[in-house]
Length: 347
Image (tube, rainbow, N blue to C red; front, side, top):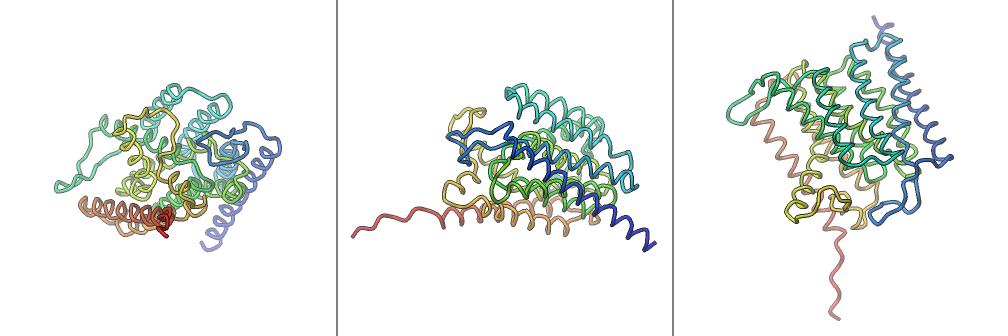
């Protein structure tokens, strides 16, 4: 048994390392060829045109590692639909990276993909209602909730992909936590994705030589959203992922609320996200990523206290979400205060 476990770990770590190398090599080629450049605009956080095919490299590394793990027997064919759907989301993003799809066309394709995905992967089975308890959803309603979750989280990850290292770090932390909670085949799949993302971050996190692009943000957003649907059979683990990803969701929710109150068009480019305000205040890409990662790690710690083996009380779940939201808001407020422009001297 010990030898078998050691062999599994060796295969898994080897596949993860290969994923990292494949992604890194792909990104290096894309950097040197300078194709699919992201031009500089008034809302850009970069100063020179930069390739945006890092997400395609992540998909290459992820596919390579997944293939090795399946060949080694670490994952079964039951995960192939999830992998193929993740690639479908990535291909939608890649089409946008190469040809610039209209917002309506991209949204329609993501809606179709989300609806099809819940039919294949399964619905959300229960929802936690304070003072009532866990309410079982009918299959049609559960599919509607699952499709909305997928569409929402894919767009959240896409919207939050604006600073070097930010969304790559965040997704790694969220999905690794899920992998540790569930283990098994999902744990190995998460390890494959982690290796690919690290290979990308090596080219992006500090110097921003290549961007994730929509191929990466849509694929990673879909994977983040689909994994808890697949793991729904492992207790009530589905609801722990939105909790851990709350800093991402909260930024987008606050930004949309502010823009709706202002009467701004939701489809027009802007710099209203809180992470963009932190950057504009003078914080580095890396500092913002670390701050966001800190709150995500706190959410991961809470998630391990709540489940999935523990029968989560809905009131405890929502109390944890509110507390984590308050911590996130406090971190943002402190960072903005520390970098606030000093008042002019009266002397």
